[in-house]
Image (cartoon, rainbow, N blue to C red; front, side, top):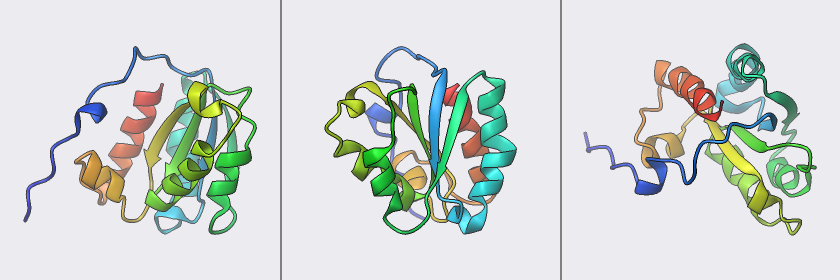
Length: 148
């Protein structure tokens, strides 16, 4: 079995001092992670964010490519963070739209990723975390804890 890639320096420590959000917009694909994403949102993610005092608005993707549209058009003026929960496809779509914005939101909005997809290549290849079974649940919990 090949050795896991080392963590890249930018992913080892925050770019700035932690500044927990007080409000967030959570975008996720309810069909992601073999349709487990909605359950993870309801049983782990939203309760942890609520417990931390973060006001959360939820948007779900409705079809392929919808994440791009959401990332580009969602009103982010009243939130501190854009949270993306899902797999590599959901993350890629939302970031594609988010980074194409021309309203300055990309410069002022914190983006967080909560891994909850089927393959979770990003989690495995970039972060060096196993992407199977209990590891996904633990990663979801750890990602939310890092945000709050």
